Image (cartoon, rainbow, N blue to C red; front, side, top):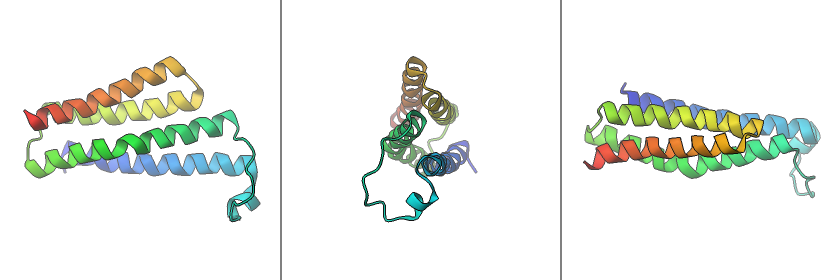
Amino acid sequence: MSVEMTVLALGCIFGIVQVFVAAQFQTRQHGLAWSLSSREAAMPRPTPLVGRLKRAQTNFLETFPFASSALLAVEITGRGNGMTEAGAILWLSARIAFWLAYAIGIPVLRSVLFSASIIGIGLVLWSLLA
């Protein structure tokens, strides 16, 4: 399997991990009865950690379609090279570090890591379109 497809598969796993980690911390805050309910009652404000985990998850889900489309396009067209591999690895590494920085609450580093992940997607697209 190519590096790009490996990174894409790991990105899918990472996305699922984010969903489950955020849900686990939310369940700890609200209790199992709330998690098993229809959740129609007003929800109390999330703890700072739960809020950050949910926002990081949303941010990942907003950018994942662009990364996955670019990586799939590289695979389909056979245009993979060192730059697309580096871009894919940069994207995923930066996304994981972004998630950790967001969860811990490090704002400036979080923004730098987000930018690095976008640069990673850009490297993939640049090589694809060149």
